[in-house]
Length: 221
Image 1: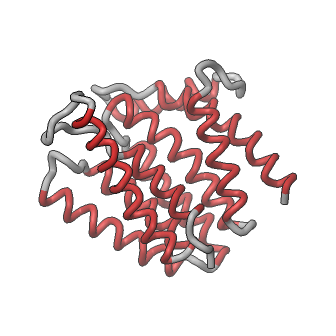
Image 2: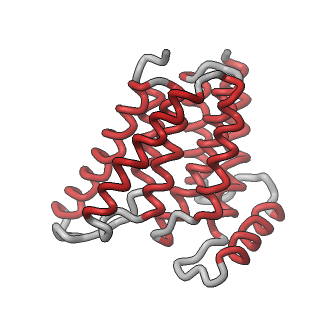
C-alpha cells in the first residue's frame, strides 16, 4: 500500500505539470472553442513532465492523488478517481484564472469516468448521485444564474458520479463541503474588505476541494 501511494504521488507531480500547461492554454475570451482546446492540448503535450515554480498545481495534484490512493479501494474505482483528480486540478486552475469551466474538459470527462467506473459495478449509484448533483446545481443556476454558471452544473455532475461511486456518504459530504468552502471564502472577502455581499468568484476550485473532502473524510463502503 505504501509503495502504491508513493507511486501515485510521483505520478501526481507529473500529472500536475501537464495540468498546469494545459490550463494555461485557456483564456477568459475563448474565441473558437475547438481551436482553443487543440492549442491547450498541444501545449500540454509539448511540456516536459517536470514540475516548475511555483509548483502549486503540481504539489496540490500530488497531495490530492496521494489522499485518493490512501482512501479509495484499488482497481477501476481508483483509476476513475485518479483521472478525476488530474482533470479536477486542470479545471480548478482554469476556473481560478479565467472564471470558466470549459466544455472541452468537462464533457469528454463524462464518458471517460463512466467507462472507468463500469467494471467496478458501482455505476448505478454513480449515475444516481450524478443526476442528483446536476439537478441541485441546475436549480441553483436557474434561481441565480449570476452566482452559478452552467460550467458549474456540468462539473457537479462529474463530482456526483465519482463521489457516488465511492458511497452516498461521500457524495453528501462533497456537496456540502464544496458550498461550505465557498461560503468561508466569501466571508473572508467581506472581512478583509476585498468584496461585498454581491461579489462573485469562481466556484469550481471549491467544488473540486469539496469532492476531495467527500472521498477522504467519510468511511468508504
